[in-house]
Image: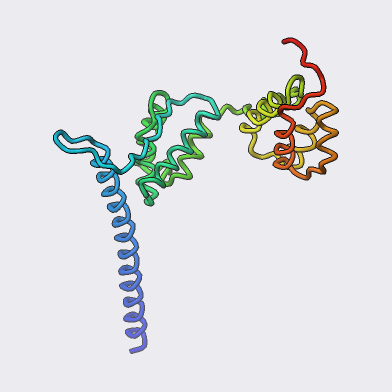
Length: 231
């Protein structure tokens, strides 16, 4: 009968999708197992064994722990080091990356993770990828007014002594600002903060972006037509 044929077709489709889902699930589990094997192998390589010569293979330095300091640079450095470590030991699984990164949290950061973990287990909070974990760490430990304070400081950042001092101060402040356009960084801040003689020289060089301006400014590091005032 016609309905029997449709029922059989539907049953075949269900079985096909079930097999497909099972394959995807096993692929995910296999990837996670592969990453765990890599971690164990890496630990064995890095662990000195009595009576055995050390391997000539260079050891990948582990990232330093992060304790929850509300310092944008410290957190950014931690996230960068963890990503470099993932790359060095070839970890690909999203789940493994989250578990590994959590192992390097200490102090207030570890306390935050312990409070989050039950929520993750019961499904009320989802942190199942490295990208989500990075976002959550930033949201928790970045000062809300970090970028605002950096912008405010840029308005007061002036070329008072050497170009070197100005360049270093400007570059440090820019690390806390991620959403400023290149035009803003160049014309409204970096160029305006220079002394007139330095700004004139860069204008003559027709710099068009912040990278060109910084490179040109570096050429002026050891040049200062004005005598420096005592601090």
